[in-house]
Length: 234
Ligand SMILES: Nc1ncnc2c1ncn2[C@@H]1O[C@H](COP(=O)(O)OP(=O)(O)OP(=O)(O)O)[C@@H](O)[C@H]1O
Image (cartoon, rainbow, N blue to C red):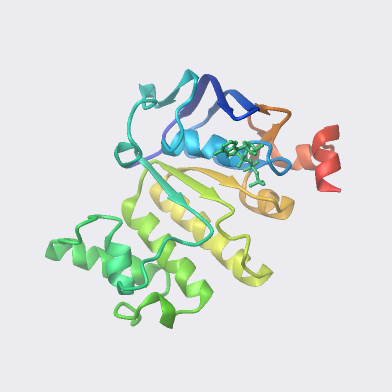
């Protein structure tokens, strides 16, 4: 629990003919957007942190601890994808409880904690429903409740809210902000929407031309984008 400094130290990774390099640090507890053209390597950058992809060169460190060789399940990282990763046959409470124990053998104390986080994200009274009986926004809340329960030091979002309408997306980003405050997590959020970056992330990593650039203040970057980003933003 608590924030963590995330470091990409001399990272090089090839995927087919594509190569990404990253040499940067993300300060503890910061909220960072990851933006760049389609196919520039944003998901690749997140996969390196999540452990779904191993670099060809370089190390990834969290608070100085080398996590490069740790399998995904042993990394202090939570990841949220667009499809929210809810299991259709499990209830809201069970889907949330998975954040604590994959085998769902929760202690009484852990059950109480599940109910608490569900109340915190506004899902009180819906604990026994299955995901199909929830709206899209409510499903998003279940996924965020699980993240809140896990309270991992690093939270990765890969276009997690991009399918949502503007009002719902704003609501999810606000909830995400509260969760990041509560857990103190370092958040990396891939988005195609510059407004998401502006509203959520004081700093942004630009991924372009095979390079993940160190984070810079979001406002100035978007107000005065370098040529590759300018072309992409239109
Ligand atoms: N499994 C793979 N095998 C070969 N090449 C891959 C593989 N996965 C991704 N790539 C290539 O790596 C590059 C980066 O892909 P990545 O998904 O990281 O980009 P992205 O910035 O997240 O794109 P988008 O915004 O479209 O989701 C792309 O050129 C892609 O074609």
